[in-house]
Structures are given as C-alpha cells and as structure tokens.
Length: 115
Length: 110
Image (tube, helix red, strand yellow):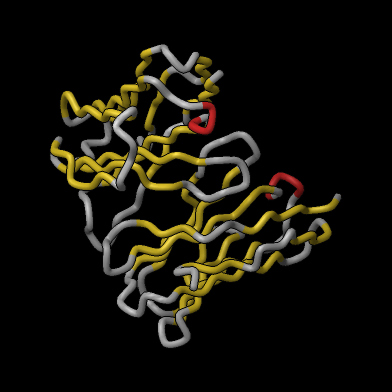
C-alpha cells in the first residue's frame, strides 16, 4: 500500500485565521515531508521529519509550524498567512531520510487559498 | 545554473508514437533518479526509479541513465492521450534530498 492521505482537500482561510493541514501514512515510513507547489512550478521542500524529529527546515517563515505527533502523522499549522502563501501543499513519505533508494510517495495535496 | 534541467516543452506527440523526455543534472555524486507524472490539479505520482547506468523498463515506460553524461531520460512507447501530463525529473544528490526539474508538459494528440 503506497497511500499517503491528506486532509482537507481544499482550504480557504483569511489572513487572521489559524488552521491545520493533516497527513497520514501507514507504510511504516520513518521520513515525512512537507512541500509547497505553486502553479506550473515543481514542488519546493519546506520541512523534513526523520524518526519524528524535525531534521530540515528550509528557512520557512514561522507562520508555518510543522508537527509530527507520531510516526504515521504529520501536521502543518498555519497562522497569519499571506495571499502569496496560496498553493498546493503536498505531504510525502519515504522509508528513511537520505537513503539511496529514497522513493518518496506523495499524498493528494491540500489546495490552500488565502484571502 | 539549475541543478536539474528538463526540456521545458511543451511536447506534443501523436497517439501511438514514442515520447522522449530528457533531464540533465549537475551534482556528480547523485545516485538516485526518479520520474514523476503529475496530472493537472493533482499531486505527483512516482512512475519510475533508476539507480544504475543503463535501461530500466516497466510496461510502456523505459528510463535510461548515463551517469558519465549526467543524463537521465524517460521514453513512453505507444503514447496514449491518458499520458498527457507534466513529467517531473527528480534527482537525489549529495544533499540526499530530491531536487526537481521544472517539468515537461506532454500532450498526446488523438
């Protein structure tokens, strides 16, 4: 089973709102990722969790706050976002971070619109 | 200089033809190479992984890797309209994270 699930599928929020994106995988993977993708651009890495610990933060603004409650779950907490943060937010997972055969599997994404 | 470059397209081929997608990378220590297919409005789907020089075939898809030339390609045989999508080349290099190319948009014409 190579399924990564994400909720919600769509999210519209105002600049003063607080919301959370959720991601879940049941493949026993120990690395999980958040990416941001703008239209007609490739995915852009935001955060990497390895064995439930944050291992990479690609200089993401503090209005994005990741959390990994356990090995299957990954959250992205959003607060005081800007309209330019509107994008497709993708979660991915892989067996381990940095391994040679590091196949990453993506969830369906959350389409975020910030008004 | 971009780390992973793809022919930007768009690329159009007639149904039944071979579609050829190309990708070059700059990090010589790269060891893992992936092709993702992304339909409009959807998330990337892993379709091929290749780690050694040569060809790897999976159904209508063939990935080719030449580490000396720092070149990886994807051939799609007997192209179908359902293959119309953006194809992303991704490389895992010295940083052990995926670096994506900008993608090639493929249209298969009926």
